[in-house]
Image 1: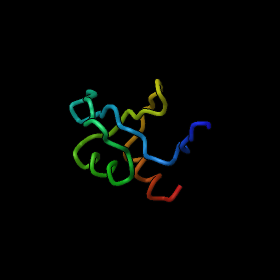
Image 2: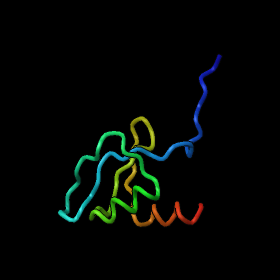
Image 3: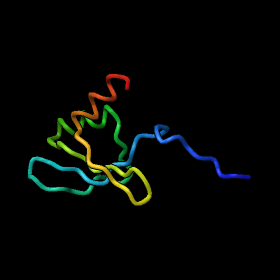
Length: 75
């Protein structure tokens, strides 16, 4: 039997690092997932960017403000 694959949008991406007002990247809490509520909360704490894991070895840097707006617009 073949292994079931999840659709990429099934779960929010996992946050690896956060960029804040101190102008440096810091490690995120383990298991933190990026959705609209998390993006808004992190932005209110002073973070502006996040590095998220998009694959086994791939990451992508995203703006927290744009992510919150994209998710709240309903894509």
